[in-house]
Every structure is written in C-alpha cells, then in structure tokens.
Image (cartoon, rainbow, N blue to C red):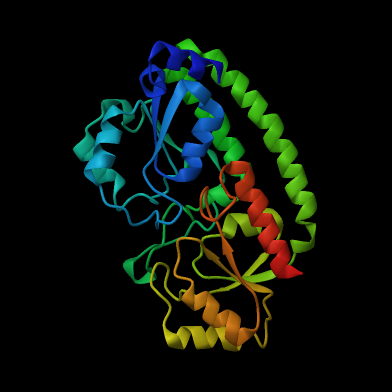
Length: 297
C-alpha cells in the first residue's frame, strides 16, 4: 500500500511499475497471483467466473494481454484446449512457451483424478489427462502457490525475496483456513450429491462427499429430458441430499430436479467471483462450505 501511495505521488501508475505481467487463464489463478505477487505483479484473468472455461474465443483483448505477459498460469489438462493454442499462435510470446519458466500449468503439480484409460469422441468432453477442475480442492491451491512463487522468482529474480515471504505468509494463512474449513465441513462426509456437470470431483474427494449421478449424460452436452427423468427415478433407490451446479452453468436442469426430487439446488461459485461474497480465494471456500452445509442441514 505504501508503494502504491508513493507511485501515485510520483505520477507513476502501478501497471507501469509492476515487474511482472501475469496472464491467468482462470480467475482463481489471477487471485493466487495477487496473493503471491502482491505489488510486484499485474494479474490479468482471461476468463470470468460466469464463463465456461472450456469455451472462450481468442479475442483481440486477450491476444494483446498475452503478448505483454511475462508469465502464464493456467490449469492445463486440456481445459483451455479450445482457445489457448490459438491465442498462443496469434500472441507469439516466447516468454510463455511450454518449457520456459514463464509457462505454468498447475495440473502438472497436483494429483489428477478421473484419468480415463481410453478416450474417444463418443464420450463427449472428456479430458485425457484427468478431470481439470482442480481448483475446488484447496490443497491444490497450495501446491499451485508453491510453484507460482518459484516461477515468479525465476522470471523476476530482483523480487525473489518478496515472493518467498508472501508464499510463507500465504501458506500459514491458507493452512489455518483449511483446518477451519475441514472442521466446519465434517457433517458433509458421506453426503451424496448430484452434479449438474462433473465439475466437483476434487471438492467431493477433499470433503469425503459422494457424487451419485450427473445431470449431463455426456460431458459438456446439455441433459435431455429422458436423462433427467432417469436421474429423478434413481433418487428412489439412492437418495441424494442436494443437486450442485456452478455459477456459470444453466440453472434450469438443477432447479427441475430440485423441484421434482424435493432436494435443494446449490449454486456454488466454482471460482473467485462466481457468487456474491466469493471475492477472493479465502471467501471462495468460505461461501462454498457454507452453502453446502445449509443444503445438507
């Protein structure tokens, strides 16, 4: 904050002074860059919480941001396959090429779930490297923070000590928050839920919840009326406590099942900014846990 005031007095914008321009593919990684980078970075998020991260276009504004970036942080695991390769080709930024310190795919530093043995087009939107929605487990956020601090120190060695200090502070605050979340979420262990899209396996794995079914019969394809009826019928033999959907998704299938199955429909932020109050990484999980507990009560 003192630096920002000094810059203002000198007539220098923070964007001009910042050492590292960070291009984040998703809002969670932009938020993490803010935590670890502080005043030494200028983060840019290519997507918002109300967009499907699979389906983005390489707009001119994204190309411009990509060209001026010093570091790229994305989920990887083909989550951005539909738009990032085109963006990389048009942006042509050597700093962000795969294999360079400025290219960070978080999926390479976490344990991937649901890695398929075989993949073909008939399976729909299936990812060969595993389910890419890793940000719903806070332990993956911690792994990403460690690697991000390392990469920032590589591309900006002049501020390496700052990144190390902020990482240590973040780790302490994050571990304390995780302990609190896990204690609060203890009643969710074993709770069965239905997902609108298979976007929460890491959240379920972390909390010990069970995914009983998915409203999409084929990943990435809107559910048919017949499939919704079959999911509803399945509640008779395997009752669910809630149906969960992400903020960017169409709420109507979940609301239909909620009404006909008489179970709560839970809108989760999925990432930073998804719902009111989920304004940073910490409040993202605060809101998520609170909404799940309210539905399960």
